[in-house]
Amino acid sequence: MHLTKSPKTVLDMTINASNLTASSSEVSLGIVTLKAEPDENRNWNGVWALESLDMGEAMPIPVLKGNGTLTNVGDTVTIDGALASADKSYNAVFSTLIDLKASEKNALTVKSVAFPFKEGYISAKNTRIPFDRKKNITVNLDVKNVSLNDLMQTLTGQRVTATGTVSGRMPVILKPDGSYTLGKGTLQADSNGLIQ
Image (cartoon, rainbow, N blue to C red; front, side, top):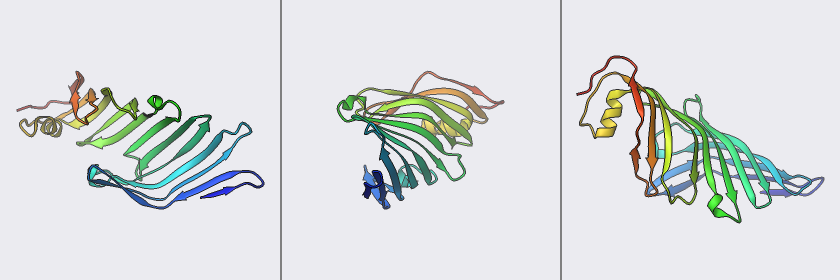
């Protein structure tokens, strides 16, 4: 980390690659860089970049890269950014609010997220996830051309088979204990299919 004072103060930081472990799952971070400087009101503004994010076995998705901005005004830090796979098929845009005096305000807001799923695509928008999760969070998933067979196999523990694809909206309720339930949604067949 370098803090330069002349001719003007600049924070220039590089964090080397590291591994994080949570619940026996390992996540690998590539090099993270941050460059910021204060404005005339002593608020800090800067940019950040993440060389790579590998979720490992916990979430089998391609390696993601990211970048964005960082702003510090008084006791509030805001980190905005985007993450995406090399082919952009997996992508997310987010904003993180950290209030150093009122932790109940701290949250990650997923402005948009999209990824391939079961031969189709799933996306969601505007989901606020508080850091101190005490309540259920509803994520409205937009489903497009998802294999009905794969979806039914996932939802029923392989007790039901089907043909065709479906599209629509499906709310998923994330509980504080990490479990989830499906809310009342609307999925429609994209073409003729069969459920057995």
